[in-house]
Image 1 (cartoon, rainbow, N blue to C red):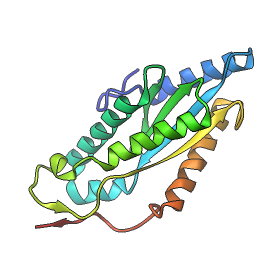
Image 2 (tube, one colour):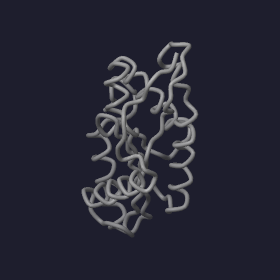
Image 3 (cartoon, rainbow, N blue to C red):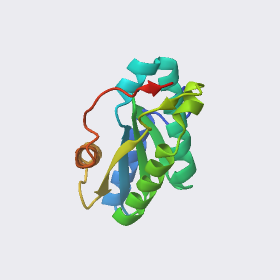
Length: 171
């Protein structure tokens, strides 16, 4: 039920909860929102600083998600550097506000704290997110995830975070 590294709910738990909410929504209960997030250029962080530092980044992002998501949310590690946040009853504006708070908290993480180095890292951490609403944007669990995933990649592209080089360290 829990991801052993981040202690967030795991991928399977997300799907179970999402399916339950979709069924409840079909029976007349209120819908909600799904936020998909990933860490921008995470592979380059792992390649530059090593997997142990990458694991620390994943845990720091999970902490940011836990801190900003609220009591009714279901925070999950979707896989790799992707996270999902299920927000029952939330509308688009609420979901976007929460996602932006998480993004700002991630951007405020001090990479030198994670790396344990007294050097200046030339690229800060950041993440991209996308939101889908159910039943507004989609009515099945897989379509809800696909819609949020597409929105996340649009957000990433709009911000210019889709590519680029590895982070570097200046002495």
